[in-house]
Amino acid sequence: MPARTSSPIPSALEQLGSQTDSLTSSDVADLRRFLILVTDPRDARGLRYPAVALLCAAVSAVLTGARSLAISEWITDAPQYALGVLGFEADPLTGLRPVPHAATVRRLL
Image (cartoon, rainbow, N blue to C red; front, side, top):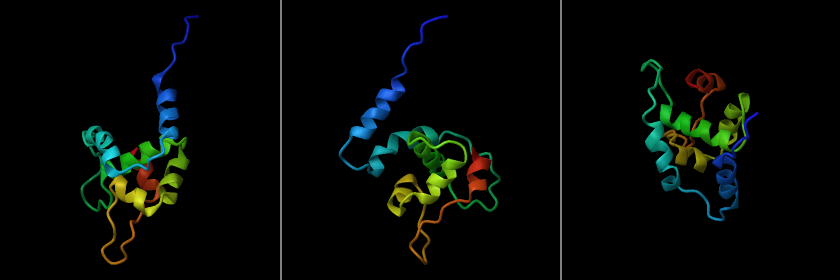
């Protein structure tokens, strides 16, 4: 059996956990640059959430250890400021950023 090479991902996750500064929207800009290239397979009628915001939220959830249904739960539990950084727009009347239903996230992914 060939020897397994170590993946750079665990060390990158350890570095993320050791940062003392909070993340800003400029920290996720590089991620968005790549996720914007993903084609949105959904029909344009009735879209409420941008695909890039959903993908950024899903990636963020996975980076924190969420899997499967926990991805939607992570998005639901995310603080409002984090939803803003991820690209979710605030409701003009309430000022709150609504989150997508779990089925919406599942269909996109």
